[in-house]
Length: 204
Image (cartoon, rainbow, N blue to C red; front, side, top):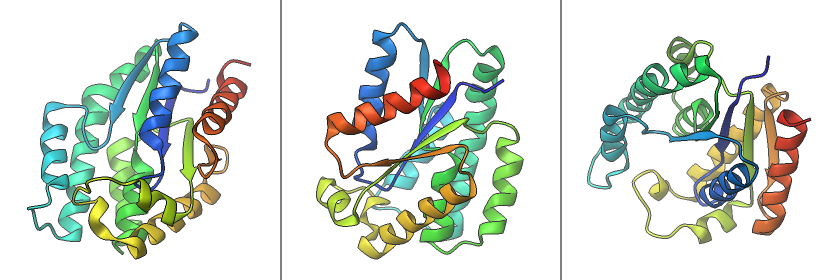
């Protein structure tokens, strides 16, 4: 049976947060229960790690950054996601999950992909989304949409281009899970695309 775990992915500035809000509104309108989580975050420990990672004043090495993300994910999986999925009572909506670490730290930072995959597999085990909505748009558009930048968002155009490429590569490797959404379209068009795919996958 398909699980009810849905993740939203994309480079910073792609409009992901806006679309998650609209998607949750649709779920509410259709009386579908859900639990929303974000990465890094979702637990007391993970939120503390999030603050460390996004603080512009912190100088963090690439490998330390990667391990902090994975530590935050491990805590979220064990304390929140796994218990929720075992109950199977509501949709689990996650603002970023395992693919972000692969795209940002492996493709973006250059950390060994096999190393990240190995640790990720140990951390998440069977806790993998059944659907990942990847919002994809031109890098110049995403950069324009960014306001005040945190430490991760300040990495620059070349870095975000590598991350974008990474997400698209990951989508090719997991075609059944990924749904690529053209985020160059209008907000309402993107909203309709996401909801349409959701209906086909879960409400048919």
